[in-house]
Length: 82
Image 1 (cartoon, rainbow, N blue to C red):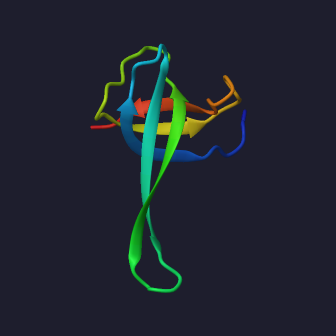
Image 2 (cartoon, helix red, strand yellow):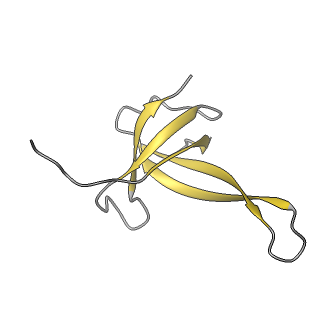
């Protein structure tokens, strides 16, 4: 059994696709504010590798952690979700 280790996965929405074989994916999460005890929506943007250039703006995708592909790219698009 060949195990490559556990890799982090995230689900988000493609917000930019103007680069060649790269997309920017925005991942949203809700966290509880420590003082006001209200849920706040936080977002993080990841640059991900899209080998086939099939992802367009607005697509929901799953990204997976990978080796460094460039200065800012450390994620790959695993699959396009419905």
